[in-house]
Image 1 (cartoon, helix red, strand yellow):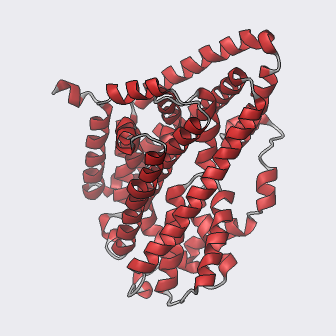
Image 2 (spheres, one colour; image 1 turned 180 degrees about the vertical axis):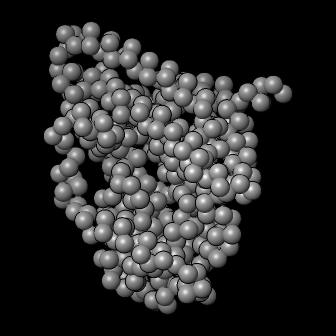
Image 3 (cartoon, rainbow, N blue to C red; image 1 turned 90 degrees about the vertical axis):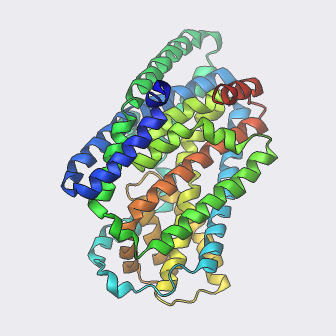
Length: 417
């Protein structure tokens, strides 16, 4: 019994329950709850940049073969594009079948279109050419300070290649980096002990600020989104796991701690460092983990893709805009680009949605105000689906590159049983 109470997963689940109760009965506690949750996420965020840097540099320097680095990166991006496009198509298909927006009375919701202005302005400022040109940074220290994952990823790859070219002369630096990496993961273990506080604060803030009452008008959309993400995980991702000969259920059990932390904090970033460590423990090589996980956090957003495609169809149904098959194919094409282009931008979900509606010119952009109140309750599903998908992508790429240790995998899932 004592073992259960001291288990982090159990503690986080209890904290989430307490957060819901606190938010319902003490909504005035919301600002403090937000501060508690944000402090925990900030503590995790301070570790993300250095952990990504050291993991990638060490992985590439120890891999040695630069053609392999390019091949792994290329495979990862191709996999991300295929799976996220599939997620978009599934989202459109289910939204057309379940029709969550039909019969919805938008005028009764008293939405405030002014709240959309900030997302509309951000969407109009997105330039996809500039986004990719932004990846090579002019000041790496500024990138570390801001926690710009893509810029750090790019620099770390170059640094790793440079270090590998030193041969035996770079061994002392590699040894130092390995020690620093271990220190950072030890710090992460200390910070993760505070996860119950972060989960409590996140849930208390969400319930206290938005209230469970906001769920009722958009309950049909929420149910449709959750069902679709469930189908995607246990249908599509399960099939991928089967094809690559590993168990989805055992993988989910292995990362259950990360799942409940994301559920409480509504942020997949809160477990990025621990997911990198878990993927190494489950058998993926350090180099594959270093390249796939950080890139996936920007380009492999399965949950976000489902949410965005369903939101577009939902809003078209609310405003009785009958989209033709060709128009829906156009939506897929637009989302294939926009869902990647706003990666790392605050409020990116709404920015992408705003830019998609702007490009379509069929649905009023002000309509996204309808989703503002309930979005927070769907962000957990998005974040969990994104995180699960990234872990599976890492195992798939590792197996395809023969960079997967099956003995480590069996040991990890065996110890976790």
